[in-house]
Structure formats: structure tokens, C-alpha cells
Image 1 (cartoon, rainbow, N blue to C red):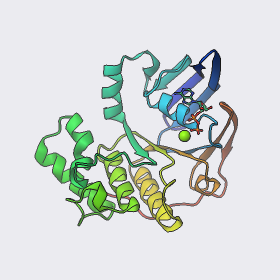
Image 2 (image 1 turned 90 degrees about the vertical axis):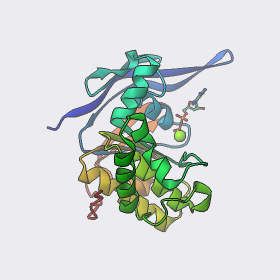
Image 3 (image 1 turned 180 degrees about the horizontal axis):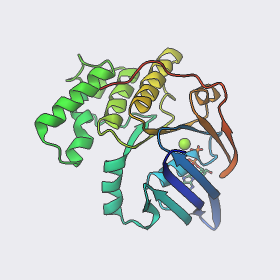
Length: 241
Ligand code: ADP
Ligand code: MG
């Protein structure tokens, strides 16, 4: 059995709303292993983003424990959490979340700036990444000068540039057409596989779940079932950088 990278124990998240309480996550216990591809599947409002944010240390649970690479991240303060995220985690968001005033190259170097990598090394690594995602000729383009698919490629380059242990992708292809979706999935999964990263993909799209090792079905904040994918679609392209 490979290494457990993240473990959740009895995690609960309650949002107070006026006099009422919204139970966004209800007693969630899960284990994520190194190098595996997970799909978090559920309808809108089922708690997917809340779960992802809690695993990534962006939100605190109301109750329960999150053990990430042996660290109790529910106990960490903001400062430690920030450096923890910079060290271990990459993110791909549906809205790309690129800095509008920065070029593709500058956006991709951001995680390396936070980790104080020297400028020359930063630029070299970011260039390699952008080439790997097919944007070798778009280094100087700003987000507004690129298509949605190209912007998502930049955000994929940024997510992987640090070689993080875990990559979170929250509806990464939600705004893209079918062909571009296929290309992005190949890129994300190819890289995760090449570098033995754990990938947690959030989606409401059943099609995408076929690319994963395991599908975690979530409903009303509860884990409904966990399903191993028998006829997983294997990615043959290598995502090297
Ligand atoms: P999903 O990503 O599956 O669409 P979310 O995790 O965003 O679902 O939301 C789960 C539930 O928690 C929803 O009922 C949502 O309205 C509620 N919720 C999410 N974030 C907040 C918040 N910051 N304050 C109050 N309620 C929230
Ligand atoms: Mg969501």
C-alpha cells in the first residue's frame, strides 16, 4: 500500500446563517494516497468546494481533524498554513484566477516567488512549464490576450511549477468546450501521473470521473459512497517539464 498523504477524521463544517445553521459537511472521514487520482463528485451545493477548501487549509473545520503529510493542519495558524500550501499544494480553479496585469510567464512564476527561488531559476522553470502546456510562444501575453483554454493552460503551468505533492482542481474544465476539456484533462492527468502527485479533482461531470482511480460521491455534505473505477481511461501522454 502506498503512503497516505491526507487523512480526514470526522470532519464537520457548519455555517451559521442568521439564526439557522447550514451543515455543509457532516462527519466526513477519508484517506488519500500518494500518486492516486480522486474525483469528488456531487451536484451543486453538495459540499465539494467546502471539502476541498478544508483539505487545502483555506477554511477551518468546525470539528474534526485533517492530517496532511503528518501535520495537523486544523491546528495551524494562518501564517503556517500559507507556507504549508506554498510548499505542498497546487491549485487549478474554474475561473483560472490569473493576475490580470501579469504576463503568462509572470503568473507562472508566482508560486516560485513565494518560495524565494532566484529570478533566473524561476523564469527558466516557468518557461519550461509553459512550453510543456503548449504556450511556449505566449510567454508575454496577458490573460486578456488569451483564450479561455490558453488561460487555463497558464493556470495548470502555475499549479505544477513547484512540483507540489497534491494538486486540487475545482471544476477545472467548467468553462471550456468538449475538445479543450479533453486537452486539459490530458495535461493535468499526464503531469500528475509523471510526477506521482495526488490529484483531487472536483466536478459534477460524470464523464471526467472515468479518468480517476476513485470516485468519492458526496451528497448533502455526506460521503454517499466511494467507488473504485474499474475501466479507468488511462492517459498515455506524458506531462513532462
Ligand atoms: P458545491 O461546491 O458542491 O457546489 P459548496 O461546498 O460550495 O458546494 O456548498 C455546500 C453548502 O454550504 C451549500 O449549501 C452552500 O450554500 C453552503 N455554503 C458554502 N459556503 C458558505 C459560506 N461561506 N457561508 C454560508 N454557507 C455556505
Ligand atoms: Mg463548488
